[in-house]
Length: 430
Image (cartoon, rainbow, N blue to C red; front, side, top):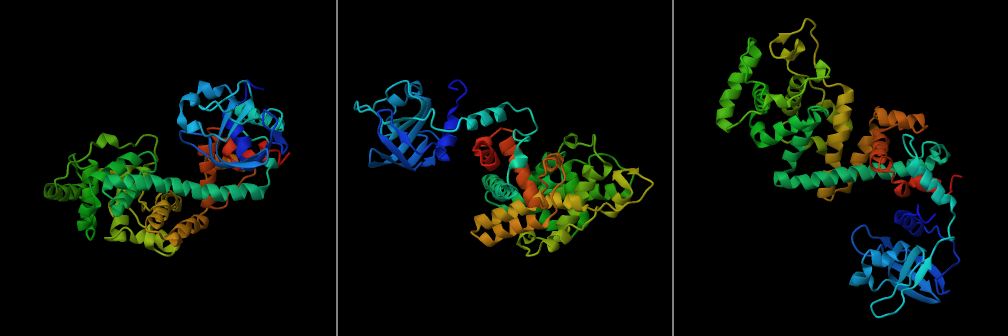
């Protein structure tokens, strides 16, 4: 067992109090773990602020954990003052006496034989598993209440991670929250394939410039299509020529340099998702939203926000997917509810959560969660695979939680940090 033992598993045993209650140090002194401390994920001892009773005396301080006690010197702790005041050295196997610089022996707890070995076998099976997720064959044994409780936590964790990323990116816009929101909203209209090009377009063409034209749909589209590089050609149709004339005037006025049109992708894409359609729809949303984009996230009701997205590409696109290429069938190019939900889930709601956090408004953070709970669960490969395991989310809050679970826990096999994995490994469901 020594060869396959890993420190992360020992951390798991220690932090979850999974050791047998009758413990002694290697020199036969009784040990009672009052508080295992807080795990340290940075440099320094593994657990801070533990409280341990050794031979009747209570000690408060840090704990270091190793597979073998000789790892102390292997890791160079004997030369580091941060480790000289350790109150307990926890090891799987004690193969060496460890002393402080003063010569005093550091109390050592050898835990081999003091936990249920079934746990390490389950954990090793998870690590060797080739199934879609490591616990695919045993997750059905976990209580559904436990799973839902874990998903509630993960749903908030996902929002917090997105919020932290937005806060970091605020520095790039000199703390202009509206500009960052505009960029990310633009990115959302790229729907993965053209997301980078859309965000680049919005970062080069700032909202402060665009909002000067928000009462004129032709000028909005001219600025967006021109900045995107779509107006550099010669056209037959009057509509793109109008846009081109308008853009040439505005580009000179605001010193706008168009992007390279090669940045935009059309391959393996339904025509309704072409960037030309999405740019026009984005222009319609901006015109409808008005001069303060933050009104979107300050709105009280989700239905009101959804109604803002009830917008279509301009009339020219009823019979076109590209400039100068007319199609026979006329179709109004409206944003579908699936597309609207994706924009809400991935952009609007995380920004609402971030806005609440930055402005110390917990009610806005709660509103973000509430809105996710009002939206139907997403339908993608990850969600369909979880449904096969009888885990079927009803709302976007839980579908987002499952996506987060898969990407941040299952993919990297962080089973020891997962509540579902913990239930299985610790034997609560077996």
